[in-house]
Length: 357
Ligand code: PMP
Image (cartoon, rainbow, N blue to C red):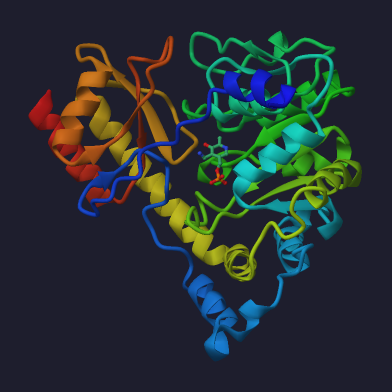
């Protein structure tokens, strides 16, 4: 048995993703998927890729996924992003895994918030990266002044998960300026639902990497596509790891579908507006039911009820066919994270809560 196996693998605490129930009738508000289907152009593009009995599937996909990188660059043309500044992967989870392997492995601990995406400590365990967590303030905001240099890198989602809290762009710019020796990774999985993208800062900051996914705003969690944008030195480091590991991260269908999704900005705009409208309606209903609702810039809300135990509420909702996420973690064990669904799903949730409370 190798030393790696015995010393590291046994110490891992793997990430446990949210439940993916088999029953279609459930109101599924637990893993922040988009309630709307992807752009119709996605289905057209994938069908086109499958033409003539799928003959193209005989052939390997483009290992560089250049079409996709160009589509990403075109989307962010206002910030002068080029295709050479884009790295793509099989979901942003895989992009993040490369980030931990290529950019954050240092002698010094990397820093992230104490309440954040629970995959980060898992990656640290997997890749033997030391880390330290930095407490959020009493309002669950990220306190940039508490991130000390030197460090092995900084990573946080913006908006943060599972809180939905947003760090304004000037705060990120000042963090980047204070940590020029570190890579700062901004995980923008939810930014399209009301956040301000750090993409605008890429050209000025060689230490910034912005990570994005098509799983949320583009309704493509099932296709597994994510990407990172940064200056060329960071992208080259990610590519070196990728090419030592799997030269074909994205299959033909994923590339075709992702290009179509990114290129349909009008559809993205319509669905994100719909989700944001539903979020405002749901927030006001939940407040009316006595919940404290944290202001959210994401496609979920983070709530607590002063009079009811969060675990019991989640279980009672489950019995009524509504699934929400309850994290049994310190400080947030009395909160629920509720994904924004359609207005009808929101009404079903509120009806179920009225029965329970
Ligand atoms: N970052 C954050 C903050 C997330 O919540 C998620 C989704 N759970 C991801 C990244 C990964 O998303 P995906 O792998 O579907 O792109």
